[in-house]
Image 1 (cartoon, rainbow, N blue to C red):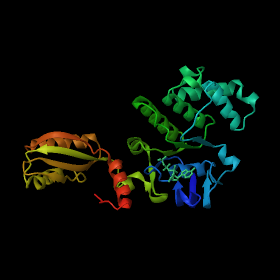
Image 2: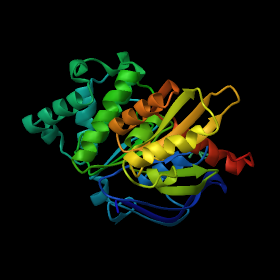
Image 3: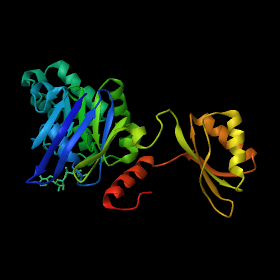
Image 4: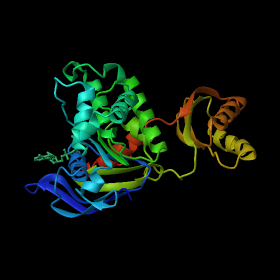
Length: 326
Ligand SMILES: Nc1ncnc2c1ncn2[C@@H]1O[C@H](COP(=O)(O)OP(=O)(O)OP(=O)(O)O)[C@@H](O)[C@H]1O
């Protein structure tokens, strides 16, 4: 396990923080930490990064107890709120980070490290700004530089506290691609993010904190109630619906496939209906569309079910607020 905690607790004079967190993060995955504001996510992340000392409990990062220098050297960390010195350039910031990571000043000026700095700046899309002053950077550029600092020393584990919160859609897309490439290289990514579409697209596993407690953790497909097979829930918005249509359709589908059973989500008296099915791929979804049309229905809309994770997030939060579970 890259991160392994047991009953980990840190409060601020007995209030807030997080309590009794037992969590395992396997090697080579992207792991998402979720939860509403004030849930205790940053407190937990800061303990992992060695910035907060736990009140109680046990934790190992990269197989070592918290705060051990051997583990820290293999750990990259992007804090939630950070600011670099305005008068430095990205190259100077990263050279300084090299020194913080244990390199001698002379080593950070060596050609090999200089090219490592340029490669890292290229990775996060900042190479063109390598020699500009950080003081003139936009928030998104600052965040890219923070990411560069976290990745500079080629860590085995990166802990990212809100890495994309200041980025525009292009920037978010680029960072998602970057995180996937890191996973492809075997790097484990621990991501604290409110950007649920990013988490849904990227994360293999996730955990949900609420009020300082861990409410759920595990593979994302299990948390979202899937069966673990490949594929997606697809939805179809239709007109011309009659009460007997579902049985007719499922007979026709059953003759062609064993897996995608159509499920009626909603129908009204005017013949409008919403169906869903678990499909293996887009071709299967396309076949179902043609089948619906062949059966005399009007197909208004079809596509993957959106915002699964958002619905789950709201359900989890409402279950603790005493709200209605939907
Ligand atoms: N330095 C501090 N001193 C006192 N209380 C704190 C401190 N840091 C956090 N807290 C409290 O601990 C609780 C958890 O805060 P934390 O920042 O860990 O949550 P979070 O899930 O990261 O929130 P957000 O999503 O808003 O960043 C909150 O009630 C917060 O007020």
